[in-house]
Image (tube, rainbow, N blue to C red; front, side, top):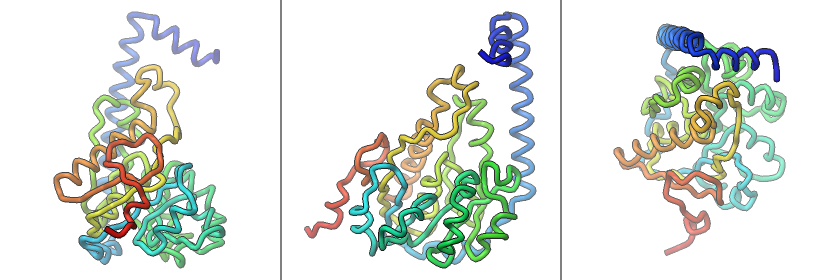
Length: 284
């Protein structure tokens, strides 16, 4: 056991010291969360470029293509003539398929660094309408900064990514997570622990009223804070947090008449009604 872990265990076993340390931690977290919220409110600016996308696909249908292991080339062949959103590593299979998403999203700084050379090689902003989520107050270690956008993707469109409860609230107060759903992407996207959630927000903003998720297995583990797993073994699992977000998207859809279906082959996402992808294209 590492020295730091030994110290943590000793503190936990101390009936006087542990409550004091825990109270101090919660107090510092409260200050940190609210400071970040305040900074975000000061630096956030609306994205005027996104106004032209508002309701441009009113009452139409689209497919949101995540990059889960269930996704197949045959799936992409079926939807290649449809309006679609995709993200992240979908660019790695461009050489193997004629499929190109109508809209491409990227908002994770770690992912962007891994894909940067590939994105430059294919000139992503000329291939797809590209949307980059930026978050200046964290920078491109955990999200994409405005500086990175201006240097590499300035022919695309940027949107504000409100990352506060992802990076702070959820890890310290997982029992009190309040998910949100953005209805105005020109103002901000509300993070749902996955760019697929942002794609749903973007699709709704564009006016789509029939949305199909594909390759959305929701089984990816991602970054987990090991220290918090002891306190909240389920609520810090990224897949669990994403499902909480998808539940919020479904609530919004039910209220506003947006139908969201899961056309993924398998996976663990059961929030939305499941449909068979091939059946969507069968004539009645």
